[in-house]
Image (tube, rainbow, N blue to C red):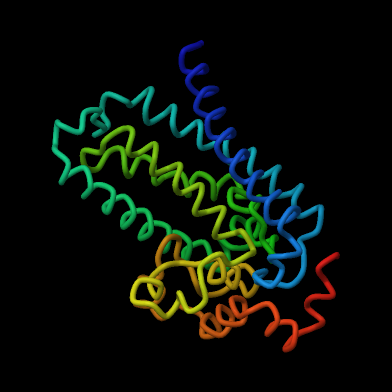
Length: 268
């Protein structure tokens, strides 16, 4: 038995568990407990998930984290000598270092978009992706709530990054940490970007919590991860996206006047 590999797996799994559950937990407490009432007007769907939704999502998240740890062992322990990781920025210089950040975002967003669309094909959706979509009103705990097969597909971005072009090792770690943060934001259920952000020259291309919440609510369209490039180019941006974003980010008093019943659900 390779005890070093087991130790590596435990360490990687622990780090992922720590990062994910610490960040998701803090955000959950902040938005779903402490700031629930004052920020209710920023809630995309004016209702709360059920307790069994949280439990199911946390259970599947734990399984996903174990799978992610296994991929880390495979790539960076057993196949570590074959990866393209390097440790010193001076090996390739700062310009290349910043290029790799752009590369990681573009490659991950592209991979995610097409993998995500594939999982929405009827057969794959029913047996794999439906687990994630059981949370039609997602919360921070939904971010890693994947069927084991989907977890494998999700974590395939790690070998793609590790074996394609030279990538700074600590940059990969930081990037994967950022994707946890953005994934939690995408499933937050509250919109934190400002009013009219979706119409700015940059906001038009950035994926938002509203966009991904609509995907969970309606099951179709808005397949992107970080960006909306592919959704806009492929015609999969939902037609109700702009309207929903504007309704979610309008002022609290304006929302209360136009939809007072929505605020009666704040305590439920």
